[in-house]
Length: 68
Image (tube, rainbow, N blue to C red; front, side, top):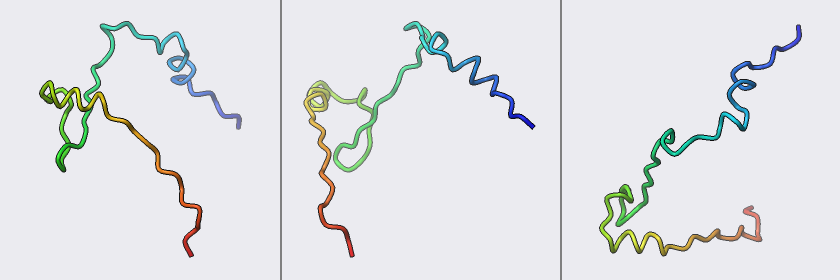
């Protein structure tokens, strides 16, 4: 028996449907860890918001030696 294509995916996953106007978008709430607990960035004071904007992220290189 041949598998039928997923009608939802073919109908809604096209690039035309994924484009949204600004008024259609849902706001995204960003949380970050501060002083040992998580907190929404929107609740930060001006100083903490500027600190958050200046943060630099890094990726630690993988260890060259494999564990035994």
